[in-house]
Length: 155
Image (cartoon, rainbow, N blue to C red; front, side, top):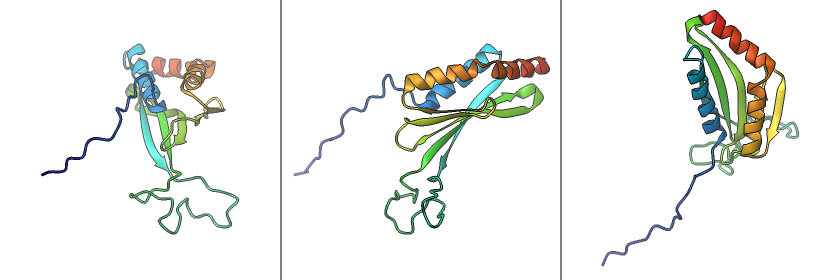
């Protein structure tokens, strides 16, 4: 007789929850739509090792010497995701990073939202706050002027 093990996982629902990457990707699509692809945008992501801890005697690039605290791919458990929102003007062959987001590997919030163009840095604690601050950045006069200039130069 075969001993069948049942699925013990609950149904995992992600309805109503958008990660920063999903929210940024939607805004990238909206930029292309609203400018008829004169400007486009993309979101890139990468893994960052844990930050330098000035309290440690030595900097070890975030990696521990033994296997404790690392996953099977030898990634530190405290790794972070960095998202970059890149705006591209295809006719000019020009691109720039408008903003970036850094958050923990396994949780989306808190997150750091950084826009060096306008010298703004936010620590975001939840999705609605992320949306509000992102809207604030995208609607700043400086960001709008940059986008208008790129559109004008592309025509």
